[in-house]
Image (tube, rainbow, N blue to C red; front, side, top):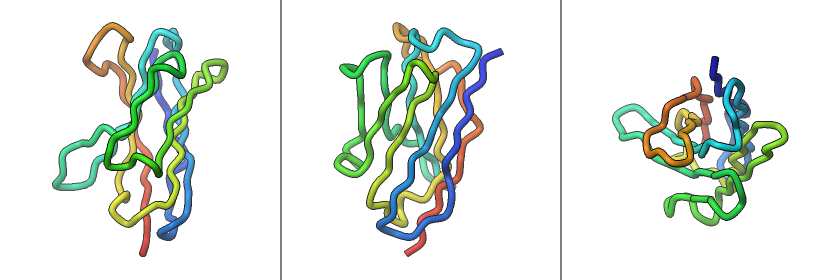
Length: 119
């Protein structure tokens, strides 16, 4: 059984930092691209960042470029989202998802973790 478990979300003040973790189990981690999405009520889900099996396969959305970074520890089956200089409009539920490296559709999703940034 495949599981993706996010952690690290909480209430913070604007300007602070958070690191989210997405830990996977039940799959061959090295074969999956792991992405971070965020969603707020009334808005479309946004792809924030992603990381393939090595450091050459990374993506960070323009909207968070320069503030968010993504990293991966294959030994721990974990992908991290480091979020710096958080803003109130970063408030969202952050979820991670996995897709097989040669496919386009995300097959597995986590439950999400709430990030709330107060001004």
